[in-house]
Length: 293
Length: 273
Image (cartoon, rainbow over all chains, first blue to last red; front, side, top):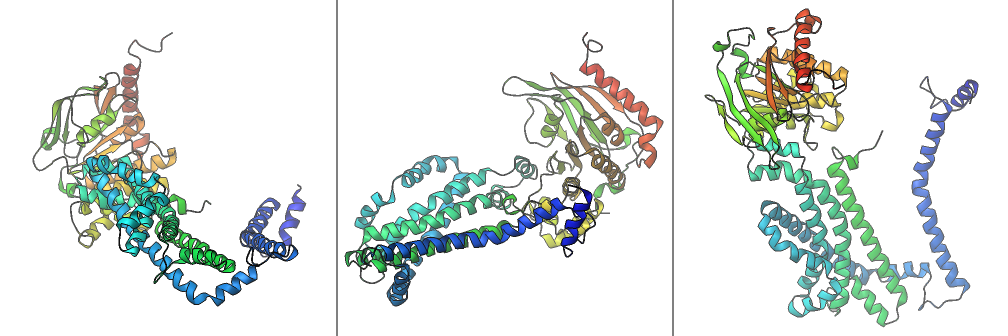
């Protein structure tokens, strides 16, 4: 690359050529960055649209009946048509997921703090936490619904069992991960247990807790849906999973898809929300939130 | 000036008996679990206004000595005695890393020693800002540590160690991880701070030049087992002017200190042929 070429490339882009040293290499990198910036949004949208279009064509070309595989348009139409019932169910599922997540945060962080304050508590209770975590919720849920009369509490319990472990495990690790020099400093300044916890361990564990929260958000939804499947029974306050079961029995396949769509959307929204919370909480100081220059 | 030591006799050349003793290490031994002798029979008397350097190769126990003084671990044998009002919790510490809390602003980091004593931020705000001004970082009070350079973070760490006006400041190779230019600048600043506040400092380093430049007493240490082999007096009063680094006296003491250090590294007299 000669010098003349360099200066010519720069002059092609006068609005970016404000700096005196602006060479072709830099320009190429800038252009690639702009393309990537646009592609970040365009590519996933395009591929998704293509997939939906392919689904639609598959149904039309093979003349598949709607009770076997509905066209995407029909799913949307059903969603709009049944919005009254489905939105009620969405609220129920959201309520259980949200409550379970909230209780998981309280229980997970509370247990993690307890573990960090007392080795004996950790030795005593961590086996229970691990057993609850490794046993599939589907196999525990039927028992829960035998012993727990209140359906809402049963559902909550199931969702909580799945959601609290990642919060507990991550927070417990975070509480132990404070910088060792800072810990020495707190010792030198004669910090007591509570001060150490509030001013050192909890802030240190925040990034760990938040990554646990992201996982737990998705798991709470899974827990809620699985519990609804197991609990079955309609009546008042039936969630989306029950709608899917019900529609399945009645061969209302478009409605199954509509409910599924809502569950997927809920999962995405939960993930986006927890990611946003993590970003807002860490953007000022944590490595994970920093843009590399 | 809030930094309590200002009224004390900070004249390094003054009769040693005139300045009160802060702390005595008496015949300190430290042996670690594996039987490694980290420190053998170390005795030091620290007087108000002293700037003592512990100089030696890795493994000579200089950091161990500092941790013992800080009360982070007990000695195996011997005693550390604090005089009068001074005690182990009236010290400031600067580590090799800045050791700041990344989630807190600069002023909240400097606030830490007060916060742990239960004092409200409002009641000590002026002292915090005064300490930050002393290290030239007043305009960065609201910044987060990640927005600062390595040298600036170290200054915050120094401000935090000094903010309460402690009787003794411990520094564990504070500038070892910085580049040579920053290090020299911070050494100049530390010397100016020392002259202004009269702080009492124990400074761990493995640099002969740093120890001569900053301190009035150099304890040269040797390894295996860690022990003090020589005490060298610099005998240059504070404040030390800009010409100190290039003065004849500085060169003489640096040479003497180097020779002492060499003899500890090569006790048989030079490199083995």
